[in-house]
Amino acid sequence: MINILTKVIALFHNQPDITKMGFLSSFFHVGQDSFTDAEYADLDEIYEGEDIAPAVTDLSTGAVLLVDDKFNNKQIPFPVYAMKSPAQIAALMNRQPGESAYVTQKVTWLARLANILVRKLGRMTNMIRRSMEQQAAQVLQTGDIVLTDEKGNQAFKLGLEPSMSHFPTVLIPWSDEDADPMGDIDLLADTIRNEGLVDVENLIFGNKAWINFIKNEWVQENLKKEGLATGELSPQIRDKGGKYMGYVDYAANRYYFWTYNARYNLFKEKEKIKYIDDDNVIFLPNPESIDFRRIFGGIPTVTMNDTFEQLFGADKVQIGNEYDIRPRVWWSDDNEAYIVEVKSRPLMLPVSVKRYGCLKTNIAA
Image (cartoon, rainbow, N blue to C red; front, side, top):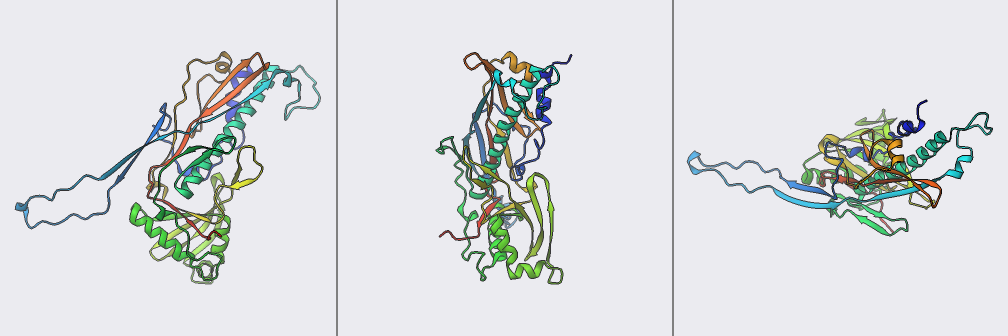
């Protein structure tokens, strides 16, 4: 008979929605060097500019001497996520989700244990994935990442020191009838174009920002079919929770509109928090024009527990080539339980620090 424990990781991969979440983190790509055993990530910033070549009088005058591009290097420590949960042997007597309330055949205890471990591993891994989405949301809206521990204290700060010109607040709130949303958008897009050398194409709206945007008279006139029709609204649900809403042509630019309404809870907190602040609009160029990386730091593994090896057969689990987790399972005599533990060190790193931004469309009281 096939040992059910050898199928645990297959069951884990087949859980619903295991690879279908994280619109913001989807802009951060996984490359060949994403899965590391390093303690720090290196961020190299190179600034080339848009200088034209200077002319010389004739060939005999010699060449103009150029200085090297500006180059900055930062070493950034990887954040650490670590969680564990016991699977009590006594709990195997309890009916598990999806099982009949009445036992009509001999219980397969190992199968029941495997199902319990899969659920615990899945819950902890989903928490890490939501934390990665939180990282992406923070860095795209503020240029930095600040993570808290189980007590709400700061446990990690990325410290990129972004250019604040890429994260401005409007002079007139978009809720005001005198607001000029397209003028505000084009102004920040032009700033990013000058400093980052790319054209902004994608605008991801918070809920209130989007409502106030489409209420604007100019926007309504240019998006309705019987109006000027320099754009259109055509809402479509896309992958990972993002919703494509349409586009508009303004001045020399075309902007594509997106909304994203996903949310999360801080650890042990009940209040839901939206990944995108209601009043914010994230500015991004074409994904091919940005270097946003999803990198995983090292976690030492010396020896594997026999139970772990039987369950997983490796010292790490890579899900869809997008996530890197380090699970561990061991037996605790004190608790009479198997303990399942998950560790991961993901970092959402925007190497193209000058090629994006975020506009706050309301003025804080």
